Image 1 (cartoon, rainbow, N blue to C red):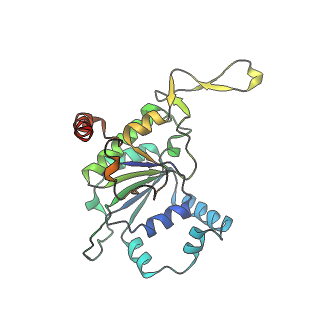
Image 2: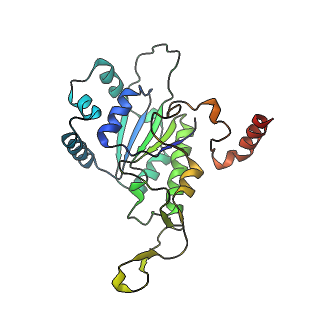
Image 3: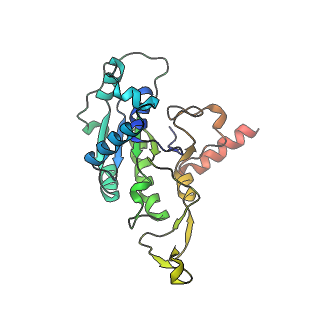
Length: 246
């Protein structure tokens, strides 16, 4: 189950609508990173009031169906205030600690894998000392290790657009300084920088939208050669690529 980064941003209402309509399997866990419950609910209310005519907003304002009630009841949601809290939580994360009960067993020919969704993952690092290749990589490593350990599929998505071409510091704790004349008001990072996609593509497969290609549930067979793997699996990926080319 390959970890995925969703390039398209999802508003709070779009996130909830997507989870409810994608029939996420138990024990899917939703991590709201860098936001308190009050902040998330406030953003959700503003989102619904700003675009009540959108399909997502209309669905959430209507009485929930039995299927939506059943799915939402078995999804574990946690609010993680800081990057440090996120790493600490993921280091001891276990699906067996959840108080959310599993749903009744229903045989299904195509059951999607359970997910570990990290919402606002990239943005939670911004404006902190962890806004760097080193900081994001450290958190991504813990996230993917936790997902792999618990047999979940990691999905990273943010509420605001993320530019993968943005240059960020390589090391954590870097500061900004004025470049050129002070009157220009242009600030740049001290030390080396690299594009954000260097760390994102190292750990995650970039997918344009949640439902594009095969979606977060499954990866199509035609993507075997292109897909990224964890760094520890490079040798295995080389063998697969060679076999496909033959």
